[in-house]
Each structure stands twice: as structure tokens, then as C-alpha cells.
Image (cartoon, rainbow, N blue to C red; front, side, top):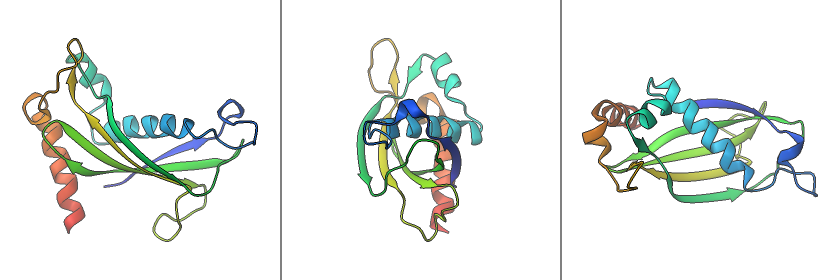
Length: 146
């Protein structure tokens, strides 16, 4: 399952070269992961209300083609790995009109988020704390294999 999240580049997201400052792609990815969770019926607010958080554990990004002020684009998000305490997402940015099945993304990212207790930052098992979310991720991954 892939979820598309639209973005429009704002002036404040660009640098002196007139392109999106590289760190701002992380904000696009965060918005897209939140949108992904909403689309699968498990909004991030539910995680926070239970006293948990999902900080980023690892980020790997490759920049191919910069976005510029005013451009419309979208982020394609999908789960690529589901482990007890960590979820890994593939997130790719495309300009509006690009075809994710044939076009190279402007930015390609692999982001791993872990589940922790808000107060202690101790890792927790997603399978134990949110079994329905863990099962949903497994369903999504099983769909990839078909």
C-alpha cells in the first residue's frame, strides 16, 4: 500500500540557491508519515494519547533533483519493514505530473522510526502496545509480496 501526500513548496522552505533546503524534506516526510497513519486508520494522535512517541532512529536520503519555490509535488510513503520496536518506511518525493512507476524520484528516503514511552524514552513493542497497528503493517507488507 502506498499513500500519496501532496506538498507545495513555500518560499521559507528554500535556501539562497532558490531550492528546497535539504533538511526540509524531513518535514515533508514527517507530514507524509502522519498522513499514512491517518489513511490506514491509526492517526498519530492515538499513539501520543497512549503515552507513546515515534522518534526517528535512522534516515538515509538521496537527492537527485531539487524542488523550487511554488512547485507542487507529492510524497509516496509505504512501509517496507515491520519489527517489534521499529518501522521502516520508504518515502519518495516527486514533482506533480511525475509517474512513480517510471520516473526517478527527486528525493529518495528510507526512514526508520521506533516506538518509545514518552516519559522514559524506553523502547516498547509495537506488537504488544498496539497489536492492531502491528497487524495492519503486516497486512500491508503481505500485500507487497503478492
